[in-house]
Length: 467
Image (cartoon, rainbow, N blue to C red; front, side, top):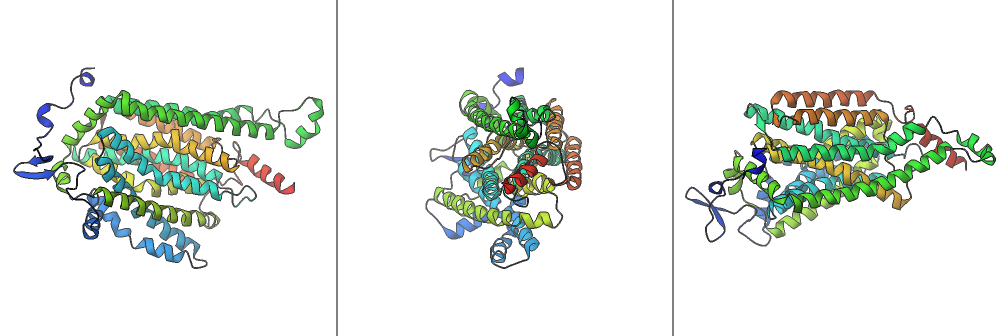
């Protein structure tokens, strides 16, 4: 196609630079993107840049910072579990916003594609920390401590939140400002193609179990008939699914490495051109260029501070999950809806702001790339961590969640096919997400649900306690 081969950015749009490395906007020199024009650490300037953040919405999120010390103080009091969960849940949002913003500041000092990869990675660190904290706190010896269903729901919930809610809001708010927004084929085609491959890999263990679960005999029957040639027991099926999950996770992590290499090397120039073209269409580009920026020292300080706070708050959050579930919040709703919303809040704000400013290719990248990273790396990584810790974390998802993921990818792929978006498509995607949230609220917990491995995990837990 013509638009894929011709230069995307004319030389006249590349901007002029003086010999001192500054852009010129009219008669006012502006510091080159990513450069602060300073060095070292300046507390007053640091707080000023932190407050202004990347956009107005992100700046408003900073109003939630008082919840952070309150959540930390409440943790040292007994009881008040729902209050603790509520304050901690809210407190994660501004700290994750700081992590995302500092990652964004760090990424601006890097080449375009490498910078966005770094920014996306920092945005996913919150998710990785959450998954690791959950698997470390998983206790196979009790039904209350079984966090694997919540982790599995959170993996797919993260993908669904990006594909339906975040992308839908980007299309909606971008469509309010512009009748239609056109995005480049390479972003949508590579993104949806990788998502289908990732979903295929994630769902193989579920398909394997669903195909063979009716053929497997009970553990008791298998033990009694072992002398007759060794029956295919449910215990054997569980072990096979776990081994397949381990192998699949390693394969998906390798695919993630190939994806990063593809973007950073093979298609570096085309991605650079697409992103740079979008940046020059940014309605707020002149304002963003004039905003004060972190120095490298301030950037690293913000990264360390936000990482520490996010880790502590997520540990506190996971400590209260058992009490939240006991209060009546379903496992599936907690994992599929609540946890992905809080861990992705900062990233979603950035993407929506980009769509509002007309930077639809970058916004689309911020929606698809985290979904791909969750499917190819974050989800498989927690399986590998569980493997190393001796915990039975697998990729055998609930059939309900499998159907949701496949249908969501098909719906999004259909909307991306024409290379254009409008507010109606965005509203429809958000409505689909709301319907899923309602269904998750009424979906029974693992002690009631019987599809796939849930009842078998319950039986295995009871059996291990008897032994």
